[in-house]
Image 1 (cartoon, one colour):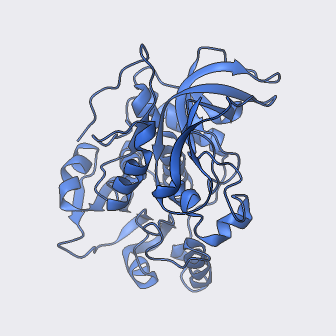
Image 2 (cartoon, helix red, strand yellow):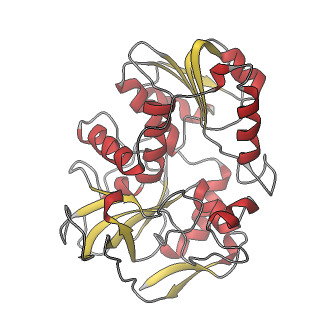
Length: 346
């Protein structure tokens, strides 16, 4: 099969397409013929090997333990492991393919990938393969920050900082569906899309300061200082830090956003509003919650108009880092005869 591989850590220049063996699923896994995957910040972390702490967390010390990057996939089940139940050959599925945290390569940027069956769900009929390929990684985190850490409920005033990317666009829709009044913060060229997705108010961060009081602040861009966060969160409210570090530009090489998380933990001693709600669900449960919202028609993954093929992954990574993308940057591997993509929003 064709796959993107990296023999060492570095920039997107270390990536190349090569012929490799088709993986064999373990007993609890399925083999998926990949129709779409995506590139995002966690993929960048794994390609770059930064922060260096991730290498000690399973990524591989001197080089990636898994040479094929990619953490999420949408496609068709080709074969089943011996212990798999609930899925059948031929099912259209999507989900994250990595076990545990996402700071390691999962092998999804390839024609075939093995994934734990428990982490995959059937693609809602209303989604194209491309939209499903945009949904898993961002959707899992969006469900976590909106439904668990943010505990967003009807009537809440919710601020989403950095709302125009893949995670933010799903978070806007999910918060609006919960009955919240959503204020979305991003660049001017993304605000019309965010209004269409359900944001009642928008702020162009390049032209005006982010002000006001909110019951929930979801800091997707992770640019708010402790002082800013404290000032924006109303009494009894919650601040949710996502951990984006602008592809290494804002955090240290060794710990990255882990260092900022440690700072917030210390600051919570005197500012309890910097804490979010408890994490109560697994990623598999978050995937099912995401699929339900999609099935209900209240969430649709946003795909950037620019999509890429497997040999264009280095260009996809370069585009990702510009910050110009609206929604998810998708890599399409759809073979002839597979379901065509729907027109992208925005």
